[in-house]
Image 1 (cartoon, rainbow, N blue to C red):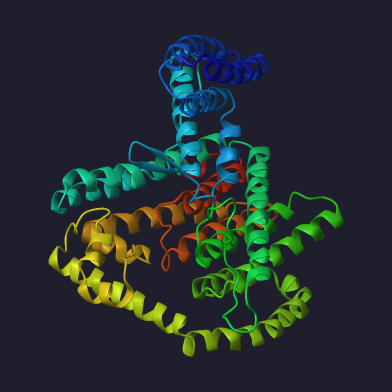
Image 2 (cartoon, helix red, strand yellow):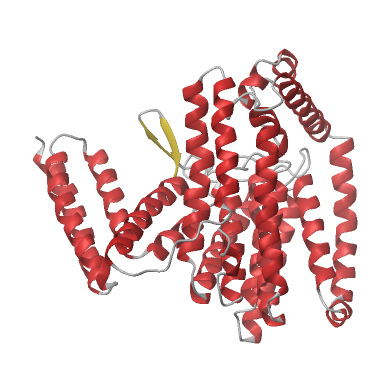
Length: 481
């Protein structure tokens, strides 16, 4: 055994243990015994394991364990870290063939920690029942996806895809947030974390403008490399889909700011998020922002519209030259025409797959294989891509059963939020409306993009569910679940 790496790893872990001890002393009494007992057992196990694994593996394992205990005691901390990491979908960990993004690592640890905590409290204390938003309908969609795996070339691969992406999104990105966010303070802090993350994404996009050839190339806001990787991905849509949510989350956060200067700064940042999203020249971003903005203005009072008529008109004037540039991109540049043809061909592939297996589709995760088998697509565009649209993906992979159950799930969530919104006071509506519009925009964007099963889409929806429940001052939207 190499003794130096062992003591290096041991000292790092011991420092974290001391921090955990301090955290435990200030945490809820019900969890102390569980955390201390488990920590002692795991600590002994890690000492043994460290003797047989590499230093880096030992550090990684120790970090996972320490994160578990921290999240066990402070589930809100796990949620905040998850929200901060939502756009980081391309900083990956590779474990025995599995590719796991950082955000999924954090969300997964938080899910298991929260589940262990909830089970312990349920067995030994009296706690409020856990909330499972529209679980029956989501379960129906999941079952349809599992049944579709029987029609896939490999049942095991399709079944694993269902567990890894579909089940995980509900467990980690809906179930945990709606049960952790139980107060206005936690909701506000969650919005702050989202705001911080969006600010970093926006400035990464702005920085990209300084590394482009403004004279000879098509200039748009795109992701940048950090230490040799694209942490948020390498496509401009990955910036836009996050910022169309952040625009309205910023407007919601403004309702918690009392100072005039603070409200103005938040407003400026919200406008900056919108401009950066527009500057990606993503058609999906423009459509989504138009949808969100229209609903936001319509929902406001007549006095509000009269007060902001001049800024709105000024915004339209600014959009005119950008609109001409967008038209030029879509009609003259090959990138716009090629993108349209690419999506139309994918729609045709989805349609043929659905006609071939209309009830349960071809199996979850099979869309990219359907594209790979299409000679026309491979000849024209090269490597296969996953579906650029939520509905064409579900139609091809899960058939009519998947489409109907998923539509029912989304409809039930929408109806429950709408009913709660109608019962809110006007001040509460001012807080809830931007959150709902942000979440709706993130979902609408996935009619044109590929992040349909990722946390950046579903955590905002969970925030919207939690927001209306908190602002209504009761868990009314969960009563029937």
